[in-house]
Amino acid sequence: MALEVHVVPHVGPLPHIAWQRDLETGILAGSFIVPPNDDAFTGSVELTDEDGSIVVLDVVSGVVCGLDVVMWPELVELPGLAAPVEAREGQVLVPSRAARRGATVLEFDAALTASTDPAARTIHLRFGARRAVEPIRVADRMLLEVDAAGRLAGVWLQDLPDDSGTD
Image 1 (cartoon, rainbow, N blue to C red):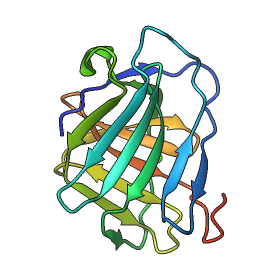
Image 2 (image 1 turned 180 degrees about the vertical axis):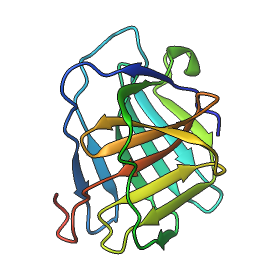
Image 3 (image 1 turned 120 degrees about the vertical axis):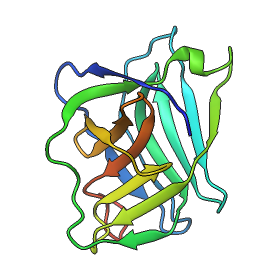
């Protein structure tokens, strides 16, 4: 996967992301509101792997502002799994040049892996090979990981809903 992104400082309070789990389909979704900007890419970034896993990132006005896990990769349970505490606050932007003019969906093939804590309240999704990353807190319960080359490398989902489906 080679989705290049830019990180810019976040101004103001972090947005709240509301997670919802559809118990029938297993889809986990969450998003937050971003002010519109007509000059920036708005659409979806679809990440798929050869095993059929699908993660869709929501992008509004160039800002990654949500996520849907449509088909889960195998979840590996890791006792003690916790998101990084130290992370700078920022916005992760998908440059408009990444999309062909008028495109609303970007598609990337990537090896998708997922780890969870025993309670399934924290999940770490990794895109591609393991590598050094910087965590960027983009919302109160979501961090994105960016590697040294400026590519999206993963996401941390925190305080996920329990089996009732709501957070």
